Image 1 (cartoon, rainbow, N blue to C red):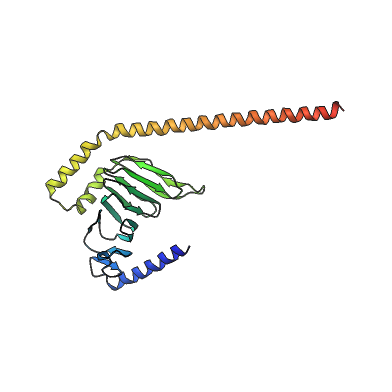
Image 2: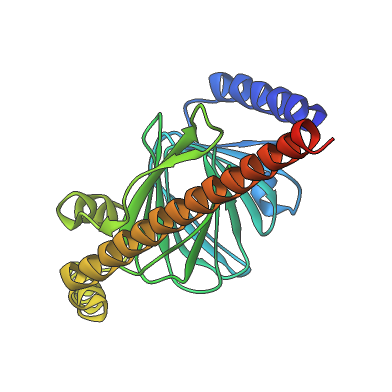
Length: 245
């Protein structure tokens, strides 16, 4: 609880700083904290934000807010983050945490849910209920809050919607148009047939569901058998006590 109180106070101070200095493209709280190793809150108010520091290379458009808790521990408060490089980086979001020892991925805050897109990372997402998901390259999914059963809500893992993603990616890309096109083509070639991979993923989910249902049926039948055996035993004990005195 104290941790959340400290974070709330920190963010309130950060918002006050934003109102005072909203004329710049980037607001840092404390001032110039990105040049140090202390905790740092960042608000992107104008042009896109690009950071290359140690083993971290990240990009964010306007209206994105981040908190750097340490050099390798970041938190997305709102907006969009492109993690181009972050082999030792852990990224916290409201609905889950992300980590990848290689490759790049995107995180898009959509208000009541977080969209995760894996470009070419070995990406592991840990949801708020503790469930972990390994997101394949070229795929995306959304995650949200806990339901009434205390389980995290999340969507089906499916191929990245490139029609929607390309304009966003291009807006943060720092190279030439030719270089961007080459990188897009290279990624698509490495992804292979995403439709076929989707079919394999879906088939695996169906098989696991069938296996789970079969296991539940088996457990139910075993429970009924135990209850029937217990009932027969109770009847036998009752008969002995009544008729064999």
